[in-house]
Image (cartoon, rainbow over the protein chains, first blue to last red):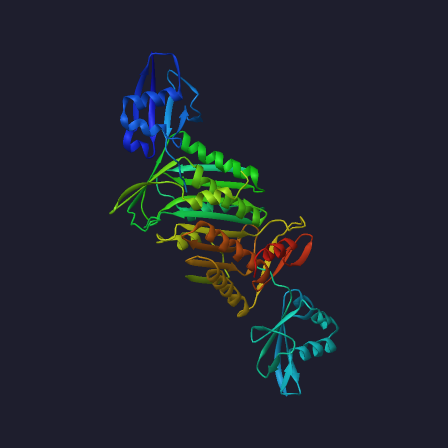
Length: 83
Length: 83
Length: 153
Length: 153
């Protein structure tokens, strides 16, 4: 059992809030599995399946096959814009 | 007889000073005639014959055929550079 | 070659930033700055009463310094500075200040120009406008993407 | 569309100029500034202890406002400002400050860039450097002329 803190930034935070804790039976899962699990739990989280929603693990942007371990933080985020 | 104040800006002012008053017999002369007269009076003023030395009458840049009347000021100047 | 970045949660004083950036600088000659101001109207013309820039405590500051360093490495500049606001911003307030110093005028212009194009599309902020006619999230415009695409990377 | 120019015989405070220029500006979004600083070394590497900018009481101020107005007419900018020092200038001091404001970032960059290229070759100043190894008059460099030639007029 691992617990992972997932947070949401940008437009998706309107639908999903800022943060939620998730618990998984496995020791080691992928970012893609977290996306799928969120979409299963919460209809609004289907937005996470859009390709422009990127993800970071421990503040590093990664692809969906990146693994996540206990204690790591996962951030899903909408399109960024500075300046 | 007319009197014309001639001044010099930039590198040529090292050779010719800032200003000199000139007197001409005619009522109306050209800038080119002033250039020639200066070069005749003063060997150093031969520098004025170089094409990069421009001239203004009453602060407006003109060509050598521009006429100059009593009371007008003539400025000869070297290459400019701002910024 | 130096690059510094700062995430500012309070007000950003662009004049003071410029004063600090040029202070004691007698070897460079050229300093170009860009100041981005919050506008009272969105690109669709609607009135904006508040702009909010959401930010992530690690990713956002890191994105700023990484972009500043990329610019310092790419151009012949001696110093690059980025200061970026986060949080709630009122129209007329400064959102971002960038500056580049170089002995070469064109390099300073290019560095500031490139840095702004990258900040618009890559700085880790999430921009939200609200006003009397509603609220919306703001993404980089087509023009921002075209500006970014002018550069080879 | 506004264009203003000022010939400064004292010190030029670039930070204060930027603060004034952006004050109350909530419609533009983009302000680009260029600050030119007196360098401690000439382009040939020789130490410069004093830079002197000679100026003409009528032609010099007029050349500044004419250049500012030409820039304001050519680009999609709402405001253009030029402040230029004249007289004796010590290394590290500001020689020139220009700023352009626009709703469009690229137009503000282009306006400031073009204005500097024109000031370098057309502003009515005569520049004289002196230092321990002698004195010389300074003309626009080949690079300045090439920069000016990038524009169609």
